[in-house]
Image 1: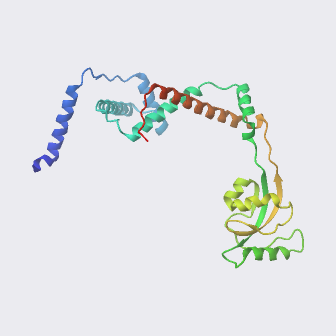
Image 2 (image 1 turned 90 degrees about the vertical axis):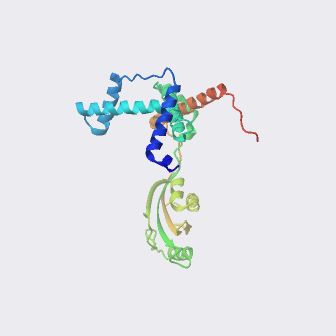
Image 3 (image 1 turned 90 degrees about the horizontal axis):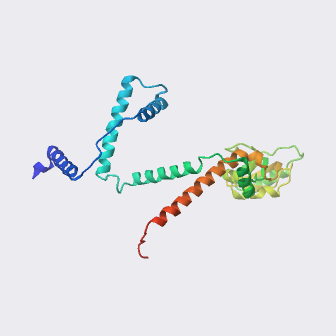
Length: 267
């Protein structure tokens, strides 16, 4: 039966199968009308990519491509090819979510609504405490005891404006207005947690980091505070929209789940 594996016979078999499926369907919509809105959309897409309007020949090609896509799209739906396709499922869920979010944020919030939203979440807009400092690095890879060497270097300073001498560091030696979280992401949590105990305008005792030991000169500490509404109005507006989209999706999910009788697998 080697002939059954020949491409021509496979093609014929597929054609017969599709013809049979087509014969089983009734009242199929076989009309395709290209509307002015379709033309406008195709033109806009072309302009976004090419930076100019399509020529008459290019427009004709775009319409031909659209017709071909529409035909194949309809045929794929007729054969239910969208079923059990993870990518299509996720895309359809995403489109429904986007539609819900667009409806939820279609109206512009008033200043009063934004101020009320800010007042309910005022603490979430708190500006973290920030530190400005410089440091001198003592490498644990280059030294037998980096912390001990840093302590000796600190003791050798004879004037308050002297700067210790250490090892080259892969990052900068001066940091301005950095939060504890930002500092921890660079030096490690232990280093960041030690900063509140340091004295301003003075070299510290050795501070341990993820890299080794450091002598740290703390220049300033900017205390934490909560800004007034006017200072964060743009951020509040963005957060308000995000919150509205989330609420809309939550409500839609609850509403849709109520419509279905769901049977879960036995535990």
